[in-house]
Length: 387
View 1 (cartoon, helix red, strand yellow):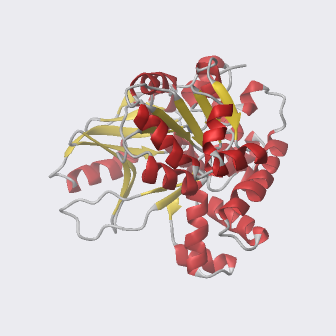
View 2 (view 1 turned 135 degrees about the horizontal axis):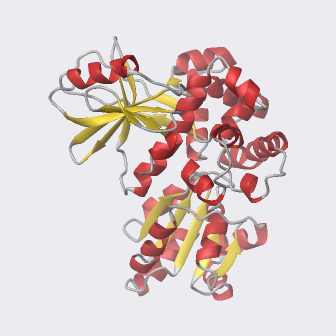
């Protein structure tokens, strides 16, 4: 079963207007499958194969003689020297578009090569796991709790018989063995796995690196490095706070979120819907899930660095979207029936940000139908986000 991706239209447009495309994202988000489905007439090579990676790294001219354009190069980060050769290929025919499509799962090596050699020559696009809208467009009868538990990895929806627990156990083992070892910043995989699980317990909360390091028994510098590994491999996202010129006492630490709710539930040992509903921090899991939907909405709108949170010593708003000089404020709440009292933080923050243009927002929740609350804020169904 193929689930169409929202990002497909952007990929088709970029291939028609840019010399090269770099599609990045965590492992198994569907990067290779998406490109091969959209561009089935392209040649394809994966640098997961050591012989191909060595040829691309040491003899790039022979590599491209063997694999002529148009070409999809999968896991290109395994041959960092290839980027300089790609620059020459692109510059020879700068007005020929879409001939080189690259994918990569490790942003450290990948983006270093892109910034040094392909700056201005390529479009960099991130493919996240499936959104709720994408899943329900193909599987409309799948309920919300199932989607939160399964997460958004396409393989889990291509075959609904796949055991979710086994999938995520294998995913974590593969991630530790391949990506983490390749990034060479981790001495003990056992300690790193404990670190990942400790981060999972904090998803949806302010990041306190000193506390995190202390709980695992590692140095703060090591915690910084390991967080960079999780970010670079697309497993966690750090959300920065919104700063207003008027506010003096704002929190300056970011919030940490896991990129996928299914992986988060697996790390928290939540196995079924009953355990999910009864989990003490279900609100943080819901907030993590909502954050993933908002990120994809912003990406679909073509906006970067538009999503923040607001927090001072009194109140917090989970998400602030800044677009075209206007702000929208959103809280994520697990409730099905929010009322005006649930909008208290939104109203407070709107008044604090009186110098800014706050145009609305609301409570993103499990309500079946969106309704107007107070002061132009709404109760918003999770299904409305992409509308």
